Length: 389
Image (cartoon, rainbow, N blue to C red; front, side):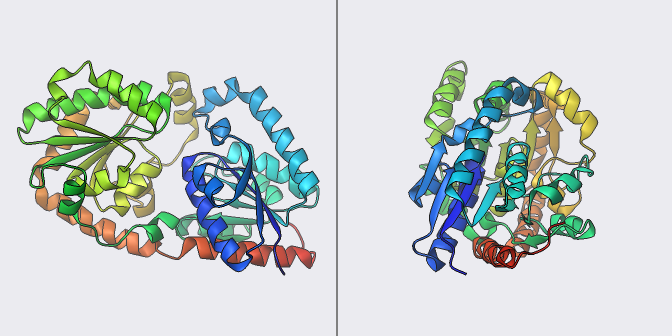
């Protein structure tokens, strides 16, 4: 079956990366394939017609979503009408489950085949949601093997495709070459700090992370710090915060993007939870995850989330191999003590780097191509009136 139209809705920058990979894989097989929906710069470069800016769906936290709910509902109605008028072969929602699953359910009820890429954390909290997922999607595409097993147990059609970042990132990397490329001292102890891609993350943790950097620079005389800014807006916000720490000026290198290069160049990484933690794992670098959110959001989340970990390396390993300091525990003093231990113990860092390399290899599956396979099979199966759950 030749595919002609795919509707894709991505929710944030990480979804933009995934979407672009699937688009490339599908278009290699179907050169005239058209894409429409919501995408970011990578998807736009692959030929996506985006009906709204990617940032439209980039709302962080439970409370924050409630504040933006009327606008999000308006956007979802508009996308539903647009997709129904366009009549794609498949609608693929990428992440953003609170938004996309509702859209997928509405389109599926109207006869459009749907898939969802990146499982929501249904295995961690409110497992009853899997029933709604089964009604919303014809197939779930998961990045991680334990997620696929969960869906099989609940009899939801699923394809484990692996993680595109694991395919994209080399199993071997060169720390010294990365330092030279970034203008860092090749032999100096190096800390990379990734304060997040959202303004709210800079607001909640920017000052804390810089206080940590200042304390560590006092403790380690030769330490150098590299901070990649996720966007020009984040760079401006970080520059304002750095101005309040003039003693750091000679020890901090603030760069535009290049977060992976910064992590490869580092001995250890301080970051917020999310895709950055997975990237640090795939760079094979020791890390500490710190995270803060609005108090009301944290109050709700702490009562709903049942998993003992929030970072992807720990979730994949099913044990605490990465320290996590969350909310009130994420104080400058606690972060400094944990990172000091990490920076002092080269043998422990080397052991963790070796383990991360093994985990990296296990996730290399050719994910974009496998996702394209699943979408093609799904479209062909729906053409045969495949029974829905």
